Image 1: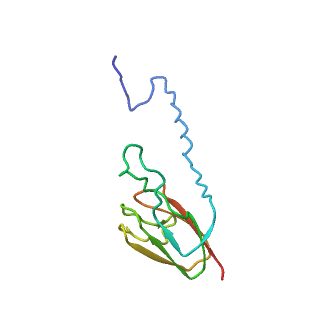
Image 2: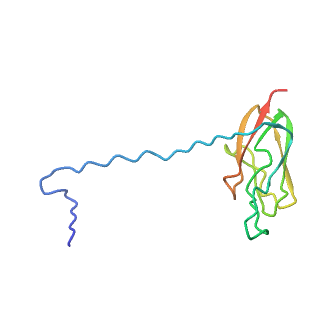
Image 3: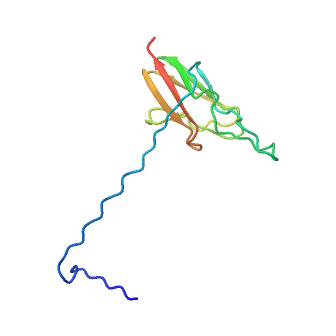
Length: 134
């Protein structure tokens, strides 16, 4: 087979319609679970141990994925696992940076609202900080 292309267009001067763009993919993330009133979030919760390999543990959860604090509260994320994690605001307004195993990082919540965050290396680790008026 031979394909021929021309910059002049089709021989009969017909135009080829541009195809419509596909609809963009969308996702909706619903964060559910009980709201815990605490200024500390543990960045690890061993959800399961691999069958036949007890040294492999699921290290991709938060012990409390919905935390509520009054405005002005310093929230501390503690990494009790074996991998480094972050808590990074989805809006980019705050980031704990990479918290090494055994370490912690704190952010002062100075604005009222509901803030979604995730772990940059493990983006399925999603949580919320709900900041209320005093």
